[in-house]
Image (cartoon, rainbow over all chains, first blue to last red; front, side):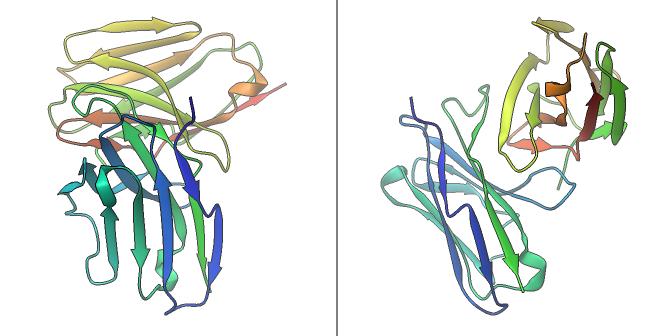
Length: 114
Length: 108
């Protein structure tokens, strides 16, 4: 069974440029998470989807970040425009059961903003 | 915002020794999970303990949960160099929230 797939693995951009990250969760997993992980820190939740509905986006900086999950499967996370402080690893995770289940993580997308 | 706090932040031991990591959290939880992250990789689930459980084992891993103290511990017995990684506790209430992690180094 394929795991959670993320792309790109690495992205270097100049500040004020846009960037997008893509995530393909494990088949059948209805719950999808986007986390941001700064160096030496734990993942911080940005947004959670139940199917195609964003049910918790309170931590998403909405002035520059946006996310979507089309047809309740793949998801994209966009930053426009990027700032220096956005440099981090963006992790996507999916789970079968939101209330009790384990999260399956992708390898992450490492963003460097110059 | 992060829910759990791991202690210590970093731990260095010799191969064969046991490693103990602690996690404290702030609010009531449904379950608590531990994850491992190798450098530059995603997180991998290790073990889940429910709020009505006190102890759980999985191979060389032993997890305890004390809901009255809002704390958990992860014990790795007979550590190996391959156990070198960061370990995170994650608490589930409405969402999964992670602590800052413990960086474990196991020296061969």
